[in-house]
Amino acid sequence: MQRAVFGLALLALGLCAFAIWDIVDRFDAVGPARSEIRILVARGDLPSKVAVRLEQMGVIENSLIFRLLMRVNDKESAIRAGEYDVPAGATPRDVLQLLTEGPTVVRKLTVPEGSTTAEVLAIVDGAVGLVGETPQSIAEGTLLPETYHYSWGDTREEVIGRMEHAMREVVSQALASRSSEHPISTPLELITLASIIEKETSVSGERSRVAGVFVNRLNRGMLLQSDPTTIYAITRGEKTLSRRLTYADLKSDDPYNTYSRPGLPPGPIANPGRASLMAAANPLKTEELYFVADGSGGHVFSRNLLEHNRNVARWRRIQRERGLR
Image (cartoon, rainbow, N blue to C red; front, side, top):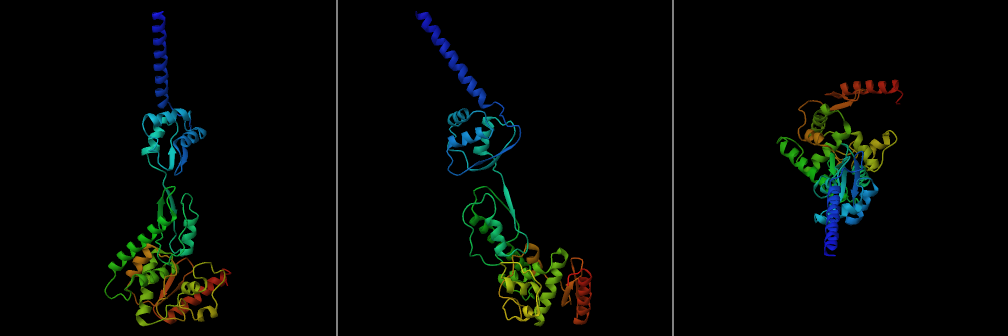
């Protein structure tokens, strides 16, 4: 009888040992995924919910085995919220290490140079993975156009804050680089001039030259006569002007209309990029006072009104030939 009981005990121990060995072995078994799978762990997800989702998505074979793995390693509270790319064939142990120590997926959003604040806020508002409300009381010209990286669950407010900080940093650098003879002295003036440059040309090699023209006009007390500022006087950056500027537009008495008001407008007309900010601070030294489109995406520059009128006539002829007028 004692031998039978002893035998049964040995058998039970053997079965138990085999079961433990089998479970431990399954911790390191190749997973069922045949390709990379992206998963999301939301803030507040319970470990059991995460395990079930992993099984449902085909990342692991058995959610109970994964839950046991978490418990054995005391990792149930270590699972981090975020997006993860799980490689094909990842073992349960690999998956657990990824969710507790590995990198989250890095998302990005790009703000084009010259975007108005309304356009930037729309980009942030539509960014997949960001949470929270998009701040609305954001001044024009305070958000630096760049590509920003973020993780799922980051807040829109935090991303906007990073844009504002980046703009302050670049403006500080640009102001520090300007010459003592520069007529621009404040961050607001610099951003305002840079925003006009940004809207006037997208050709990188022209920015400092356009800046030189505007600085020359400011120094001589001439009207800037910039179409983009007049457009902003009409739209305030909240819509696209779907028509050409009229004579009445150019004569309107609006603070942003540089055809009727001297000097810089009261504030930026867009969010200028780094290159335009540096160009505004470091304009090309030139005698030029005018520029007009050349028909190839750039501009032709001139020193006097006679040359400028000839260039304007040439541009209008190109427009007629292209059916633009």
